[in-house]
Each structure stands twice: as structure tokens, then as C-alpha cells.
Amino acid sequence: MQAQAVVATAPRQISYQTVQVPEPTATDVVLRVLHSWISNGTEGSFVRGERIQGDTPWTENDPSPFPHVPGYQKVGVVEWVGGEVHDIQIGEIVFATISLIDNMFYEYGGHISPAVTPRAQIWKLPDSVEPLAASGLVLTQVGYNVGARPPVQNGDAAVIIGDGLVGHWSAQTLRQRGARVMLLGKHDERLARWESEGGDRLVNITREDPLTAIMEWAPEGVQILADTVGTVATIESLYPIMRHDSHLVSAGFYGTEGAIDIQRMRAREMTLHTPAGWTQARMDATLALMEQGILKTLHLITHRFSVTEAAAAFDLILARREPCLGVILDWE
Image (cartoon, rainbow, N blue to C red; front, side, top):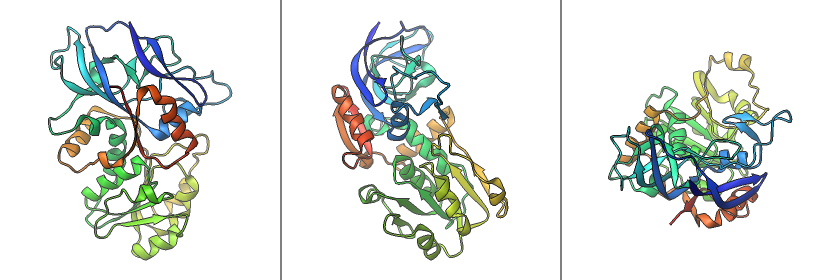
């Protein structure tokens, strides 16, 4: 069976081309993709050849992970349903994660249509959730996972390192749970998309010293520190303002530079959380918060490309030739 896909053919090289996919089985669903959302950090890392699997960095002893189809999130119209799938109907618009593919380094990928997808990787969308808004559901769930991990009491100070998508959704989740949030970043255009409320604070760390800003904002100390970027140096520089029994949530990619000094954390009896991946329960919870209007996505979309222009979309992300945040591939 043939499909169209976005293929990473070599480091930093993207092609939109015809590929082979397996024939669907009784437990699969096939959908015609409408929108797929690029995960700038994770997919950029895979396309650069920095990872061999999930959060595992590539080393010189590993094979080259090319060619492969990057990505893991999209929405589309159901066109075929396997005989053992009884709760999905042809014509429904659904969300899908990874889909099956042949003749690639990985036997699954995200940016592909028609997408042969196991039922376990399909989520039905509530009527009130716009398909485009849900096309980045896995990544939205990552932000939810970060914000949901640490215990929160009303008014606790939470500092988010990173003004990317995960940073925004982590901040939205923590604020909904009662925290007041400081968002640290380097990009004014990204920080401006944070819909801050009373008690929240934005800090561009290229102009302000974050430690000084935090001490002024939360003189009582910080209860939650969430790293969505992958910077051990920044984490450790902020230890002096962490409260006793505080929480560190680490969701960034550190490559081979992820060593954290546990002994320094013990001085404050800090708890370390390391969220990763997605689960049925967390995806369901994320969708529920989207339906309630608590987790918001559309205002974070900055660029939309036809899927035939996928190479330009990835060049935008990899070369950083202009500010970007949410980048969508439109398939129709």
C-alpha cells in the first residue's frame, strides 16, 4: 500500500515522497490526514541525528537512523476500520500518534497519509475541540505531564525554564492547579504568547538575571522548578532559591550531558520527577482540559505550511531563520 510521507533522508535533509506502508489489519484504523504538528525539539533532534530512540542519544557505536519518518501527532478523517475495531466510525475526525511504515529505519512515523494506525494510538475528539487545536495532542500532553507531576498548594511559586510549547503548556497546567508561574525564556515573541494573570511573571534571561528576578518575585523560595529545555547548568544555578521539600521536574533532552548532582538536591530534600512519553490516562486528561478551555493551543501556532513544503518547515525550525513556535503541516 502506498502513502505520502515526510522523510528525513539524512541529517537535516527532508523530502516529501511516496512510501510503502503495511496493509492494515483487523486492529488498525486508516485515516486521511488533515493536519500534523511538528514537535520542534524532539523532531529537530531526530532529524539532526542526535537520537537513536525516544530519549536515548545517538552514539558513534549506533547505526545511522536514516531514512525515517519523523513525528508522532496528527488529526485526520477515518477512511477504513478493521474488523476488530467497534468504537470508531468511517468519516469521524480523530487524533493519531505513530503510524506504520515499511522500508525505513523505524517501522513507525508521524507525518504520513494515509496513516495505518493501531487502534490503541487513536483518540476520538470531543465535538467542542477543533481538529487543528488537537493536532499537537501528544506534545500538549507532555506539558500537562510536567505540570501535573509535583504537588501544588494554592499560591506556590513555580518557575518554568523554557518558552517553547512544552513550557507554555506546563505553565498553563500549573496555573490551573493553583500555582503562580514565572516563565523563563530567551524570545520576546514567544514569551508574549503566555497569557499571564496576576502573580505571574515573564523573564527574558538575555536581559534579566533569572536568580535575581526570582528572588524578588518569590522571596519565600520556589516550590516547583520545571526544566523543559534540557539545561543542567540553569537548573543548578537556581538551587539557592529552592524551598525545602521542593520539586524539580525535568522534561528536556540532555543528550549525554544529563548528570545531576543528587547530593546537592538532598540538602533541600528535593524530589526529582522525570516525565516522558504518553499514556492513555494522560492523553485523556489532556483532552478533557482542552475541552474545558484550560489547555489552549491555537494561539501558539505561528506557521502553517503545505505538507509539500515540509522541507521549508523543517528548515525554519532547524536554521532558526525567523521566530517560530507551533509549526503545522496542512495535508489538504
